[in-house]
Image (cartoon, rainbow, N blue to C red; front, side, top):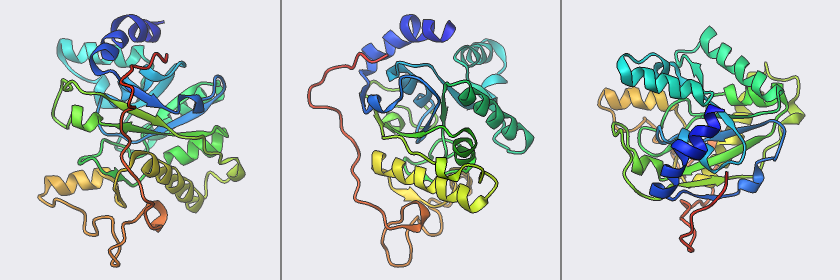
Length: 268
């Protein structure tokens, strides 16, 4: 109830009016049944705009810090995250992360939509980073299709460190479902998990037009903090040919642009 109240009465109408989000491919989201929406992650507001353009409720994993804030602001943030069904996850890994994935699996087994950011954290520089294999485990164990989603422009509206996004159009491109049912029962095979994850990230790269970097985003953030602006290989092999997930040559991609008709979608 709180989810729909926030979407249709409180937050949703304001976001539509101010940011005029545009979306392509919403027809790729099934009208019922389980599905995993795997998205690139550019800004905190990704988790606001994707639900806004979907006609169905979607639940995300969110970092546990959102639920642990102090004071009025912390309580309001925690209450909002719980109200929209966000599942807290300890990004340090271990048992806490496993518990979050189990919760996501239950959501899928109940026939719902589950949103996940395979990169594990926001991109520090707008590029697409190596995916973590949790999304592959969910897909193989649940049998649910994976729907790649590219958020467009949210990092420009809300770069890291900025609380209130600047006013500009936000885009969402939803790709065709990916079926991994052929790997049923192989969720413990780390090579299969990496292959499936790379296939998902390849789809995200193709949709978003982002440059791919074959290191984890958290690793790159640590390098930036220590004064290293780019990873050692920069996501490119010695040949100078840009890489795609799985070590393949990068496809020719373009960053999506808003539709020419400047109309605001009425989805959701």
